Image 1 (cartoon, rainbow, N blue to C red):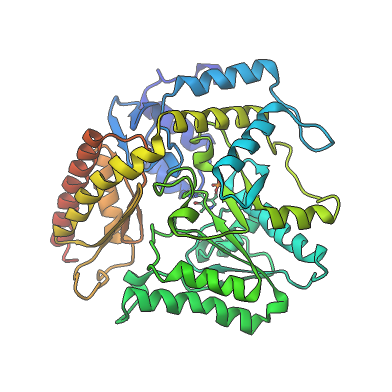
Image 2 (tube, rainbow, N blue to C red):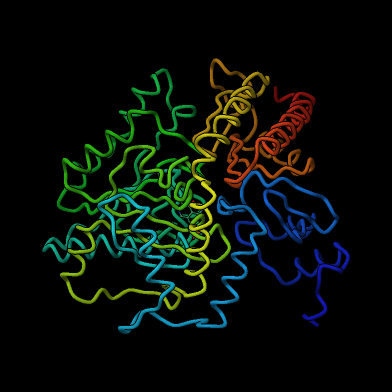
Length: 462
Ligand code: PMP
């Protein structure tokens, strides 16, 4: 039966089978079953094709991950070669292999100078679970086992395992399955929604200083680390005010707590540098990586460790932690080739010097649209805030996300993938996007905004 399910089946049949057997992540199963999932059949560059023959421009690079673009045969060839030579071996019991060695060395070369060791996982969630154990182990080895609490932010996203979901500050995720102990959340630096009458700079400082207050309240003797995304991605591409990260850095240093930069999205060129930590001048003790590491061609992630963290944890002897697929040879070989291609083709320079400036001018011009308040773009991750009143940064007279969803639906209908987070619209296209493709993306975005605006007005929401 299974062998007969191919791209050649009619879309409705594929959708019915999908609804019958495939329980999707982050999806209302019954609502999707009624509507039918869009079946994606192939992809090339920034373009997806669906089972109805539509060519869709992928403004999200999959889930923020296909940095090099789709259809790179070099990566397929490397995977095939590695599968023939050594499809699997573990790295637990005093063995290693060339793909893991070479990828770890390449990551150390690209990472900030004080970070030279990598612990591998298969995803961002797993890597953040590793980080929870690493920072707690770090303080145990230093003779301070009570330093266990990790401070994170409301509306941050760090994955959806029990550890990752608890670090994240998304209440609906906490509500499904609960939280692990020892995680404390502080406010996010979202000036547009929460900054009131303050300037962005004042608000950035206020939110950063919540870290200091939390450390004082919890007692520094109980706090292990702070974790944050340089730019919150899943929370709506929230770019913090310029004052935020320097203050966070100052507080971490003052109290001697570890700083984890979750760069699952911002790593590997997304912000116009290899790491968002460079863009925001952050000096982390641990960097979480995944997604762009392999451009999504293989599931691989990890934790890049500062020399201090690596040395202290190593002093403690065996670290009782690891995954069957930590340093999977096929995943590592593909990730390494992906990084080689990015270097050879100067993809990060393309983001900084070509794609970002070109998109920024067009993205910011969307502010002329009656429904668009602030626009943000760092490298190639951006967002726009929808509002019925730009001056007041007002919210619509409907449940948050109602209008955002309408824009997203119009984008989907116009063969453009953009997501909405509440009433923010977000983009994160493949880093190889050309200026001609940026024009198409922005044209479709404008058309979708216009169509949604008409609907919103007709419904009396504007
Ligand atoms: N951290 C961040 C910042 C992320 O954006 C994500 C995924 N969107 C994760 C962690 C979790 O990664 P994964 O889905 O690979 O587990």
